Amino acid sequence: MLHGDGTVDEREVRIEEECLKMLALHQPVAIDLRYLVAILKVDKELERMGDLAVNIAARVGGCWSTNRSGCRRSS
Image (tube, rainbow, N blue to C red; front, side, top):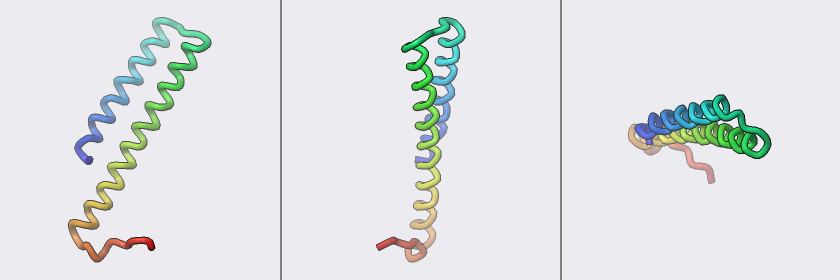
């Protein structure tokens, strides 16, 4: 999980660059513009989810590898 974050970050940048290139070169309007804006928003959220997944994996991994009794479980 921790190693996959770089791939997510790279793809996020590549998608953003492609969307911005399309905005600059084609000057979309109406539905096409809304489509590109939606892609940019989803792209950012997916990258954010990847970052959060890395944080969760690091916390869980560190907890279980160092001291199994140190993890609190909610009932």
